[in-house]
Image 1: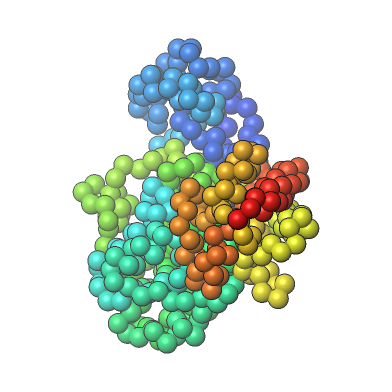
Image 2: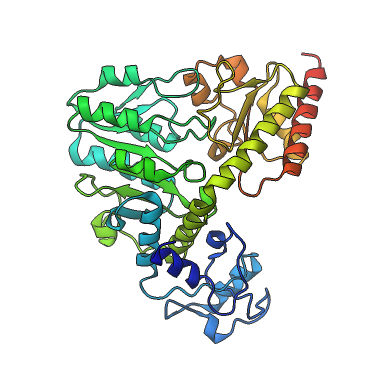
Length: 415
């Protein structure tokens, strides 16, 4: 563990707070609550716990955190805590600390990369057809072009090569797809871009990747890289965009000059430190976790297929699933409506979605499945289940049983 990582982890253990279990370090970095001091909702907050980085904090704000059930852990971040966090996060990503630009999350990071690059130099922008809407809609806004994929949800490199030229100024290819989990050939795509589009930067949306892949093997191939803390155990509302030195990108936020004038605005120091701590924990345990979660995912899919033999596993061709990240189980059921299926699963206590988790509740057909060539009727019965560090074998058993029961029930109704 680097000195910066040790400093971040040490900062979270101050003020006699109880030890934190693995993978809770990041989420526990709420702001100023002390389990060691026995603080509870409804109790006055002592003076010593009403300061943040040496500055006074309105005590009512601390009491509001307690009342809302925020994690009862005191986080004392010394001056310069964000610098330590920047160094620790850079180490996990395999980039220079000065290239890390803190943002409010993955969407802002993607927008900074796509819209910021186009605003700076113009030209044509390209992306894969299975990108997150934070990239797709930004590319559409600047009149960019979408490159198709194969039936696995993997970008078609021949199509990409055919549209590359010196007018292209940015190519965005995500690291891991957020719906079906397809791992994209970022290095191969980047090599094509370097050879065929001399003026282009390469961006990757790696928001879904840190749990499953060592981004040190991805970052050397790209100029811009986006992450979001809540995807790997950190808090919501904080992320980062790596902007490699020499990459010309116009800031989307101006006025304050923070982040070397690449992203103005007061830094969310608590969130930043929490994100770095979560990233360090995730990085340290990734190998074992990928193996464990991958086995659970395979068991989940096997149980569903055993109960619903005609279930279609998305992105799997001729039984090959090596290109899918460990935490994704995406299946389609003919003759089943996703909205009705999700209603029954929610009633059974199973969290699921029909498309991106960000769009759960939106019942329009998935653009990812459409890009993969899945017909509309099949896509209307899609189900996205994701697994993570809290998932257990019992969860898998319950979820699979609920899915099978729900599909069986829906198919029993006359159509």
